[in-house]
Amino acid sequence: MMPKLPFISVVAISILAGAPAAYANSTASNAVDSGRADFMAYCAACHGVGAKGDGTVAEFLTITAADLTQMAVKNSGVFPRQRAIEVIDGRAQVSVHGERDMPVWGDWFKFEADSEGAGTKTEKIVRERIDALVSYLESIQQY
Ligand code: HEC
Image: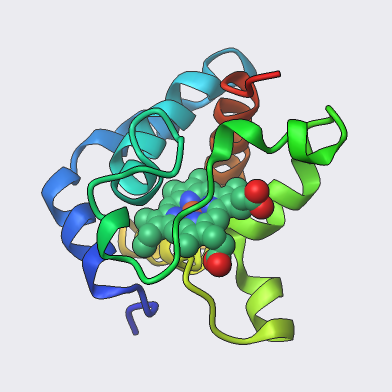
């Protein structure tokens, strides 16, 4: 079954599909680049190309998408890497807190990996993509 995503992000994803193939061979050195590619494909619609919380879709959301360049500043100057991983993945959070406005990317990336026949590598691919996204976010923090 398809994971539940807000309609609007499914539209954004289908418009931008094709960009994220870069993650397949990600290594530490190009994690930021593959994270950037996934960010532009999946996140920029709501968070904005510059991650300032001003994506084109953001104006239609009832609450604003977070400014992702201020995560370190808001956490006493330390980028909250582990929290970012959990928020983006979302699977653990949703089981505790229920529905949220942010899509559950763990479910979505799992769905994509399963559809591509990743088999036993599915969970590894999901973690690598989220990790690359977080590395990209860390690289764009404004202090
Ligand atoms: C449908 C719009 C939408 C899309 C697409 C989206 N987000 Fe979000 N995001 C939100 C909203 C809204 C919030 C504010 C928290 C909440 O209430 O869910 C948020 C919060 C966050 C946070 C927490 C920020 C903080 O300071 O705690 C992170 C990190 C984040 N998003 C990363 C991402 C990444 C990475 C992607 C792409 C894989 C993405 N988002 C795609 C709407 C979106």
